[in-house]
Image (tube, rainbow, N blue to C red; front, side, top):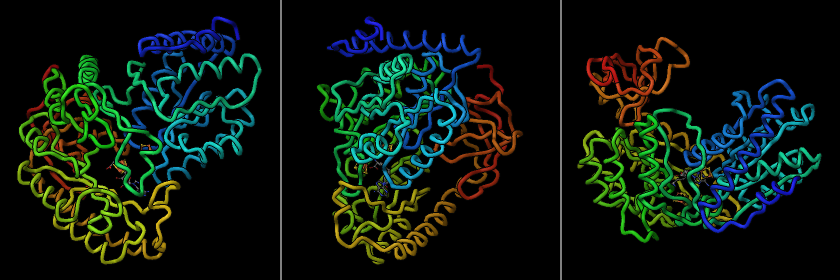
Amino acid sequence: MNDSITEVINKQINTDADELARQRKCIEIAAQLVEDKSRNTGRDITYHVTTFGCQMNARDSEKLSGILEECGFVYEPDELAADVVIFNTCTVRDNANQKFFGHLGSIGAVKKNKKDMIIGVCGCLSQEESARAKILASYPFVDLVFGTHNVYDFARLLLIVLEQREAGEKGTVTSIREGTDRIVEDIPVKRNYPFKSGVNIMFGCDNFCSYCIVPYVRGRERSRPAADIIDEIKRLAADGVSEVMLLGQNVNSYGKGLDENISFAKLLDMVGEVDGIRRIRFMTSHPKDLSDELIDVMASSQKICNHIHLPLQSGSSRILESMNRHYTKESYIELAQKIRERISDISITTDIIIGYPGETDADVDDTIDVIEKVAFDGAFTFIYSKRTGTPAASMPDQVSAQKVKYNFDRVLARVQEISARQAAKIEGRIMDVLVEDVNRQDPSLVTGRLSNNLNVHFPGDESLIGKIVNVKLTQCKGFYYIGDIATGGDYGKVL
Ligand code: SAH
Ligand code: SF4
Ligand code: F3S
């Protein structure tokens, strides 16, 4: 490696601005290497980033893609055909891990005949020591492993791998931090959609729900200063974004630990004032921290979408206590009813875990009771997955697979029945739809989203993508709608 590159890579960094400048320098050097390679081979040098996890994971993937594009790599839709493949992993449940190791096995077979390929692994699974050890021992063809706290450092890490290649050296470059003192956010981003974007408002989680691995792999909760968030949203709006999704593991506790005195509700107000932003969503709300102030802001705002994702996890107060959730069956129902009373037509969706240690049929009856009383508009139902290192993993009374299946099926049946009934309530109405895509199955249709998060398919073409269109909801199909353009909205206007 030449001395000036070594100096950039190893430079002592004192401020976020210095770090940003260093990352830009790394991108510049990498871009030169990629350009040379492209010239020598007479073709584009390509990349693929595979996202395995939640919205926060997806947002990190957009950052990784942004950096790769700045380096001159060209997007390749087929994971197995790309020159650089980055796996952005998730470890919240075991099936996410399995899926990733499946992909890793397939790519290993491809790399046998394509030695030039660069394979990187990042995301939440990389933060787990045991998973890292498994990768290093059983998948030595992986070139780079890094974690959730150093996504911003990706350009530098990639450059180290590229330089190793130039020098003919082998070995996996590994860089994991257990926490971060930096929130370097102004790195390049390649958005999946031109008109909507996730925005991180906080990182990490301090709640330590007994079953959950996220606090261990994402580290301590840290909020971003409001001014930085608003600046980012202004830039997004100027770049054509009309819908933002504010992201955090527990957005309701936004502001804790900041010097300024600010709540999540105040932040929402500030976001609502940004010109060009027409829809605001957020994920995820923890029921224990949901304030009346937030309900007021949601009720009065024209821009905040009519949807709240409010994970229940269980309807049994006994299980909730063991889960360390800090609310009861009764307080959850009361909260949901208050939200429904204050915000008409609001959609309330949830997450439910079945098979948590010690869960009995009677506990699941309680969960079903909450499903009925709250009338969820949608629910993700998960089978409990034992995560090593969490308190629940070592609890006695792990539930048998047979019992889990029985209870999972009856919860799912109830959820589907009730959410279909809820969805049907707006049949025949005319509502705003933000058009997201041409329909994949039927290209004479476009697909968009209602404020309440339901999908709608209706006749239209590509020119509508990113526009808000008034659509008559003609036919409810359970969890989505078929509709027809009505007059009004952006449609027909020159924007
Ligand atoms: N921060 C969010 C959820 C993040 S994880 C919140 O607290 O609501 C997304 C969902 O995965 C959780 O709501 C939970 O339902 C589920 N989940 C987390 N750990 C799990 C585990 N060990 N087994 C099964 N589901 C789990
Ligand atoms: Fe996990 Fe609980 Fe944190 Fe959500 S709030 S990420 S479920 S520990
Ligand atoms: Fe998965 Fe990490 Fe998100 S474990 S759910 S990608 S925070």
